Image (cartoon, rainbow, N blue to C red):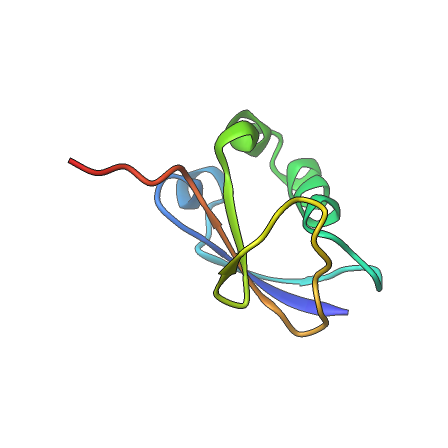
Length: 81
């Protein structure tokens, strides 16, 4: 299945891009996606404990399924002032 991944903030510097079209195996979870991204960009794993992930505009847990054609946002922790 194909998904679109969006990176935000300093994660754009880590990946070198703000978007990625990615093919995942069927029945993939958020964790499956993250493991694929960590293989491509090992430095992204340093952010793992604090990454926020949204699937189709809704925050998702690591065990949540990803429907085909989804848009997934990978974000650093939200900070305010």
